[in-house]
Amino acid sequence: MKTDCGRICGARCCSPLEGEETGMMLFPGEAEAYAGKAGWMIRGTARGQLVVCPGRCDRSERPLACRLFPLLPLLREDGGIKVVTDERARAVCPLARQGKSAMDPLFVEAVREVGELLAGDGEQAAFLRELAAEQNELKELRRMLGGGKRV
Ligand code: SF4
Ligand code: SF4
Image 1 (tube, rainbow, N blue to C red):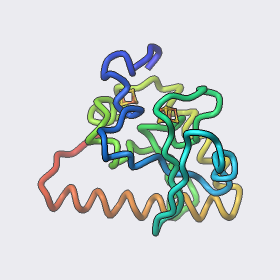
Image 2: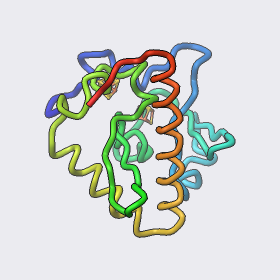
Image 3: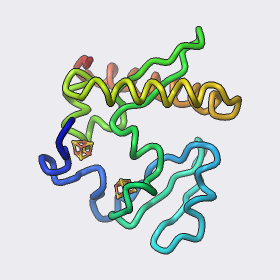
Image 4: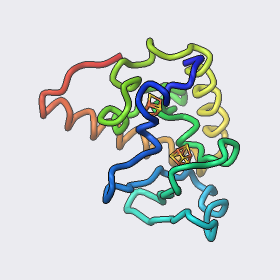
């Protein structure tokens, strides 16, 4: 959006409920930037590393996942980039529930460009493929639970 969408939803993506500080995923190489930073915590998971932030940040220092949210660039099998709304954002973000059509096309295009840049690096490309697999699993789970279709 061209305005601050956090004013509409109370910045829900930066305000987890107590006990639900699940964090934002980190792309390969990002953990080093937050390790040891006061108020920030790195967590390891089966699918990579997460960072839990203090709930406020200098926007120029926020992780890539926060810059992309609620979108994700996924690497398709043919090597192209597909920009999708993150399945995990659906429960949190009103924009994610509306889909890409609610967002500034320049933002969607910027996310695509990020994906294309990342896809040029072997490690980042592997991570984008893992993200795609995870999104497929979540989409399938939503389908099984009777969730609605989204753009
Ligand atoms: S990205 Fe979504 S959850 Fe985050 S501030 Fe904007 S509308 Fe709210
Ligand atoms: S790092 Fe910044 S943008 Fe990301 S969730 Fe925390 S406060 Fe929000």
